Amino acid sequence: MSRFLRASLLLMFLASCGGGGSYSAPRQLDDACAVIRERPKYLKAMERTERRWDVPVHVQMATIYQESKFIGNARTPYTYALGVIPMGRQSTAYGYSQALNATWEEYQETEGGRRAKRDDIGDATDFMGWYMDESSRSLGISKTDAEAQYLAYHEGRSGYASQSYLGKPWLVDVAAAVGARSEMYRQQLENCR
Image (tube, rainbow, N blue to C red; front, side, top):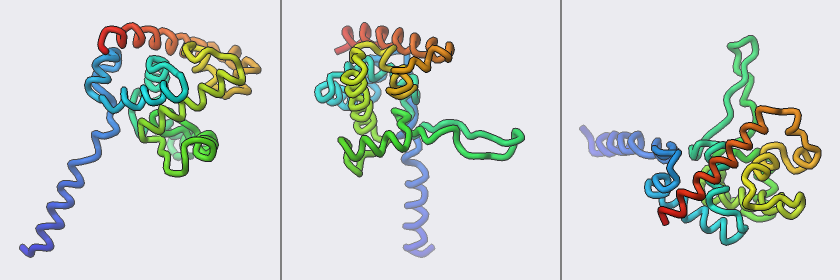
């Protein structure tokens, strides 16, 4: 076997082994301490966001859990015509924060820079901090109020202001679950730091 062929096969083997797990979710999503023990990079990113935007780590964690379950390359499901013909994804949401294309581009232009990526935990948490900071300033939502911040995050600031979520009882329930998870994470983080 030629040297080139052996090197090519080895390179292909190594490429197939790596990368796939880098976007997988942590194993124990109901335990904030276990998440940050398994992925210390997550805590560093969220603490950086907390210092910059004053959005607590537990609020960020609860929102990321709801949006992507900590899967870096998460996407919305496909929609199908006639139940079988793929018509594209439900939305352009992508990454840890499930940021939509247009909102992400606005973030890149104002804060994140063109190199910011939605599947990078540091960029994704900074995006969330930027978005929640603006929601706090423009709508008066406390940065510690995970439930209200999630409603504004999901519906957009104008949707939150017009209370569009009131016509979506399922979303109100989801936001309440985000608030409860945020409080659970807050209590856990107090004991593991």
